[in-house]
Length: 419
Image 1: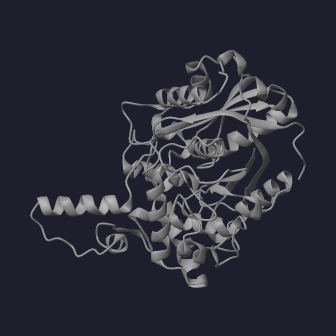
Image 2: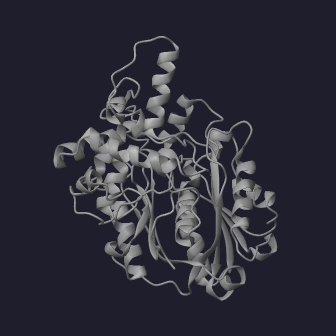
């Protein structure tokens, strides 16, 4: 794996509100919100004239919104026309791919400053159609005709992990509880409620309706109840990420111009991308994603860092099992050992390796095309010490990582950041 020909930094980053925002907000509105939020986070200011190109990650505005050719539209709304504008697609890793390509373009010398973004408005169509649209990222030869959905595919991964390593449903619940707790501290998150908040709301509703009150002693009892229905065994509702509308924006700059915008740039020192067979049955293992391992290998090598150097990470928890598998595939933990770290609280906000301080896809939300860029926004905030409310980690973050997965793991982008 080669090195970047010149250093590339994030000089500003921001995002729109995430949530169920359609019809009040559509992709153009969300992108403008994210752009303006990112502009506000550029210390010395940035204007459209400073930006050379616009790279947009978007999975499927064609099916969600009947809008193709998205990048020129997004560029025009923020005053970037007639500069180059390109859309990148890698399923849920779309804006992770866009971020990587932006880094490569600047490192090559073609551009000095690029606005990298991601956007997705998913709630314009019904939940049934959302599920069907997302299924286009699975294998259309075998999986889709057989009725496979992403909850079903990740349920197979979870079942395999349970069988091989002794992981339990309670372990996945711990991941969901942790990410929801982090999400309560993120004002941009889709669901700013902890699992305990949700449990208490349900109890209050039942009491108001005069119905029988369940004997839930804690969040685990709640998550094992019919209030958390099974979606695809062993995955329940709160193991699954949200159907979210949102956008994110990251300004990348070459080393020779970065100081024009800020005295405290966040450098992208490693980037890697991997792929795998689209269908699960064509892979050697269900408990490891080869695309993640390859992307991580490239990124660590480029950055000249090891997994032990990483202090925080944003992981692609489209389902709770995905976070657990990523912890192992990124070599933070040996295979089968990440569950011990989850049980010991190592990945909590006050743990030795905080993961998904944003709330992750589970609580922050998962507007699929925007997720990779939104992960970079959270890393930028944590490394700059500007994370909102009470989710700023208690130590100075020098090195961080984001992991953006596409589909059932057929695409992965890993990005490493350093002060």
